[in-house]
Length: 93
Image (cartoon, rainbow, N blue to C red; front, side, top):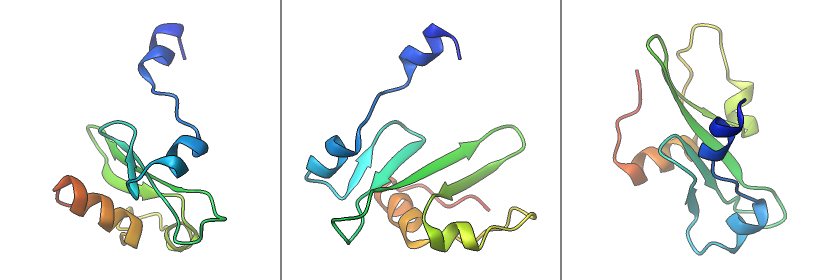
C-alpha cells in the first residue's frame, strides 16, 4: 500500500468504538463496527465488498465465519442485517 493510499484509510481504535454512543460505528461507506452485547468482547467488523464481480457483505463474528461457503451465497448474520437496516441498503444477492 502506498503512502497516499494509506492516508485515505481512516485510523480507528477499539477504544474509540467502545466510547462511541452509537452501537454501529461507521468508518467509511464500506466498513462498519458493531459493539458486542458483551462489553468484554471486541466490536465486530462488517465490510461490504463490492467489485466488478463481487457484491457481498462480510462479518468477522463466529456465526458468520462458520457458515461461509465457496458458492458466495452466504447468509447474513445479525450484525450485517443491522448495518444494512441502518444504512438503508439492500443486501447483495
